[in-house]
Length: 277
Image (cartoon, rainbow, N blue to C red; front, side, top):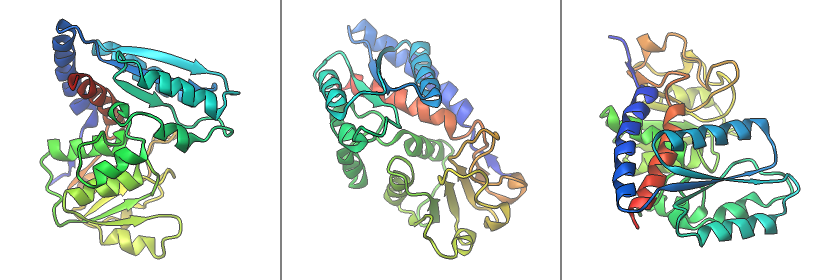
């Protein structure tokens, strides 16, 4: 039997229809969900990502405010802009596009975003709340993965889950979210010894390492759930998906798996922030 394809593209499309209806209901009540996007500098990839997020807002009827700052911006100038957006009652979510220029203390700026507007799930407080099972907006990529898992009714309780990567907005929150679903979680990283053996014993693997096809297809356990959170110019992810349909029980395709869920989750969490008013 072929593996179940976890179709993030289709789920995000269906989700957008629901979001549109909820946005319309809010607008009738006098509230227009609004996301502020902050782009510092002119990194081409960051410009593309921000444009995609703003376009998604437009499709569902939400407002987006584009805040563009020069690459000479200081930490203090960025903090002032974030404080201004925190104080603006018409802004329901704040996105600071990563990465920022090197002279800026990115972590300090992330953590200055009010936790009630942290719809991208980047603050330490939001991470801590999420880890402890307290209501919080999750980092969008891992939160999108959990939505996929739930949508397809995959029970991860008791599974041996391996997350490959430990970034603060992907690997670490992914591990905590799986732990909260009662999976037994191992985090692998660049210093992990015998990583191949660890992955071979995994019932669920999340590739979040940022290296094309780092995880080889023959490392994957038969009937594992395979989640690939990577995307590279070669149009591949972090996992070699060769033969995946015959070997896995479920998998995310690349593209069309995790990627669409990331922006969809950002927009959904902005809507949820607006609905709380």
